[in-house]
Amino acid sequence: MTCIFFGHADAPDSIKHNLKKTIIQLINAEGIKAFYVGNNGNFDYYVQGALKEIAQTQKDICYHIVLSHINEKAINACQDITIFPEGFEKTLPRFAISKRNEWLIKNADIVVAYVKYKVSHCYNWAQKAAKKGLKVINIADTSIGIDM
Image 1 (tube, rainbow, N blue to C red):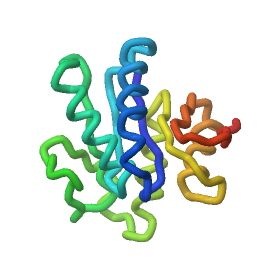
Image 2: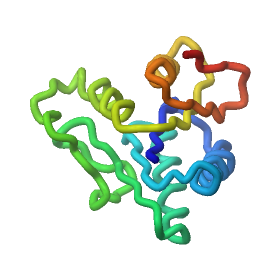
Image 3: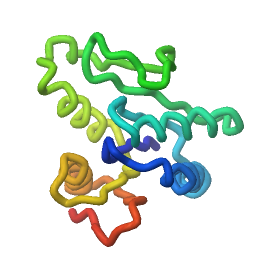
Image 4: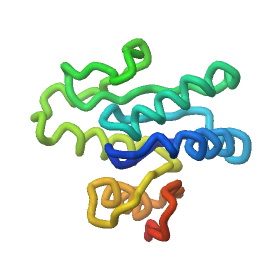
């Protein structure tokens, strides 16, 4: 099974503990072995750090940073674990993140989200994932649900 992530670029570092705990629970309870994460903003940076740390002890998992455009560099300098999906090279930069997020949803079983605001791209992507039948876990300290 594969897990992806959607979260606000301005996510606070106070989510790190809950994020790591959630990822470990998914590995142990849901059998998640593969993770894909984006490369934009604080939330993605925290996810990348948590996965790097967890992968040191959980040798049977793998994770990749999914780049949205051809000249993008990994925000945490882990360029060796990046992937650039086929067909993205001709995508205009203003559509690149949307195309990447569509690819993430297509290649996932479960989503870990940090959604604090309903009026946001993050909420919209989590909502799209739920409508496609993916389980969405919102780790934000809020009552915002993600509906199918």
